[in-house]
Length: 187
Image 1 (spheres, rainbow, N blue to C red):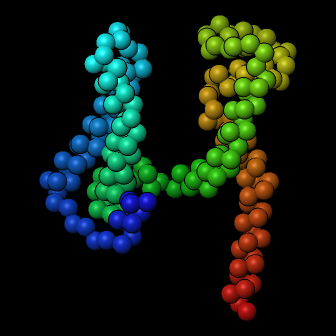
Image 2 (tube, rainbow, N blue to C red):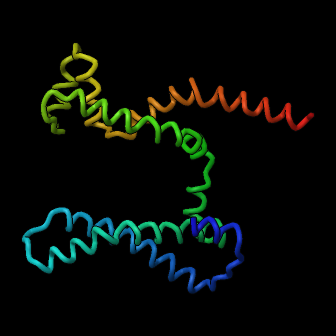
Image 3 (cartoon, rainbow, N blue to C red):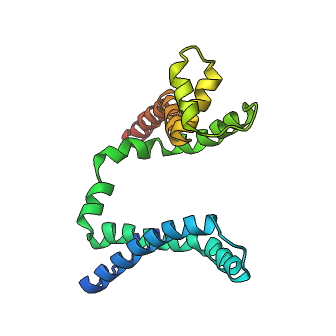
């Protein structure tokens, strides 16, 4: 919310050297968080200093990640710097994914609960499971969903479900809304 306020209500001028330094700082912070999250999730020993640093990292890494990402968004949108990143983030191919964001957000919890409640035993991803899935053509639909889920994670199946809900519910309602608003504006 603070970034939204800065983008729409202020005019901030940033020196090019400061901008380059903040870009370097934000990108290196994101890279460092990715590296540290692996090392903190797989601790070698349970030393007390390691536990304190692990607790400190776990409590602060999301805030620091969001601040670093906020500067990237601020620099791309407000300062018009970061031409490659700005080109990628403003590419028109992101628009369909952005319009289905609400549908993905609503359906992903239902999908995850469906996958959890239909498990008969703990399920691990392995190459043997994928090979057995590819060699056996006659599988039950639920087993197919588990294989698809273990291969692609939650994102792809949620987007497939979201496309259906978007086309069946959200898009027709948006068409009706636009029709009503246009009719009200003419009156």
